Image: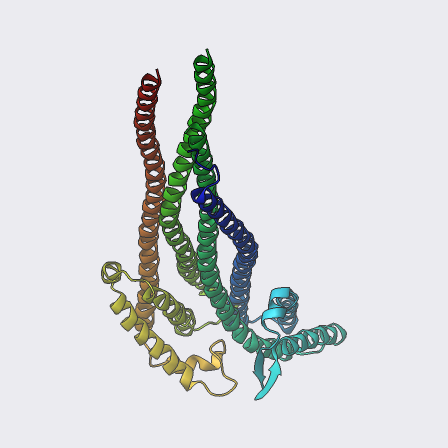
Length: 231
Length: 256
């Protein structure tokens, strides 16, 4: 008696091949979705890493400014420089202070990260960006005042610059804290990227494996058919 | 004659089927080979990911180390430059700067810097290095300097700051020797912190090197395992084929 070519075994083989093919497609889809996430995380990692460097540079810049300022004040106050020389010295500090604040506040990451932050100015909570924008405006007005009035005392200029530096001292700490936060973010992102990349790799490899299993069932089916024909 | 026709047709169709069967078996063999390779890849991928993750973590640690390898020597360099500036003006009649007040001013830059470094060192788990560079002693000495600096700051009245000549009075009872001693101690401690991070940097670099070697080793092992699996399967394939051919030969003999 001749055996039927498409027996129960063959049907099972076809069904299993189809099932594994579907699993393989699903895993491929999973890998595509995960890949999207990997790209997103990788972009975030570059961006956060850049932010970290930016905060570090800003922090160093404010620190260097304050150190130079303290040195200038220490030596100028111990000197017998005339008021004109002191006025010129302190005037240049206003200029540097304004430039420094403008550079920092114009940075989009600072605008974004500090938009909800508040600072205490004369016991009043003020929005961070607004407070420092006001200091910049004040410095612009002070510059105009110094240019207009040659009799404006050096002490008056120094008092205002020193007052603003109090807030720069707060800023150096805030920039440092923000830098630390970005390091934490970077650590979390690195962990996520690593995990998700592993997942993607495993999904792709499992997809290949299931595809191969599907192929294996088909080949077993063909072998079985040829075997049946022979018999 | 009909028997011969039947046998020749039987042989021909049988030969074609045998060919198909043989091709199917080769394909099955290749598929199983690929299957084993991908399973081996999945296994080693997990191992590789673990090492890569550790490598990235070390890279992040290196950020902090590099920051301190810059900041610590910069602090001491700045201190030395400031001391040099004082030497330039000390006999200059255009300047009247109290040496003790100036040294105090230089000292005041240190405690916070050392404090930040200690916080970062505390996050590092390396007892041997901490012991080698006397971290506990650095902590105690820094606290002493901190308390001293703030004991002077606390004396300052409103609108007084250390850059004013009026604050010279707070240094009358303080010996210059004592101030220099504290300043040298702070400078020395920052140097120790610098050396700590330098040595720790070497440790991290070695760990990174080892991890890269481990990654290479896992990679090599993965390739070797795949090759062994290939030869093993090839061997099984030949054995199976040998048995099949023997069976066909026997079948042919029986038909004849």
